[in-house]
Image 1 (spheres, rainbow, N blue to C red):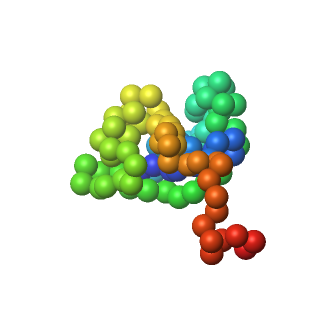
Image 2: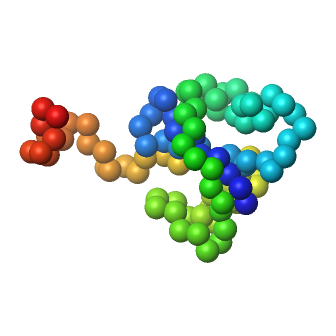
Length: 102
């Protein structure tokens, strides 16, 4: 399964996986594949920043999500939203010593 991955402009560590058609007759969909999503989802996600195209398969490992869950969601809903894991990012944490003032 071919998919494209986009990063949210509104929330750090939030990504959207959507199917990437091999060929499309609809020029608008080819130019902006997010047009296929419901308006509420597009506005909640914010501006989509393209990250990469990816080939998904049962044998492929993804860092934070189960690839079978992603593939199932894309097939049944037309997209998959990866949200940041709770507790992973602490906005109040002190920067590591080597990064201060960088």
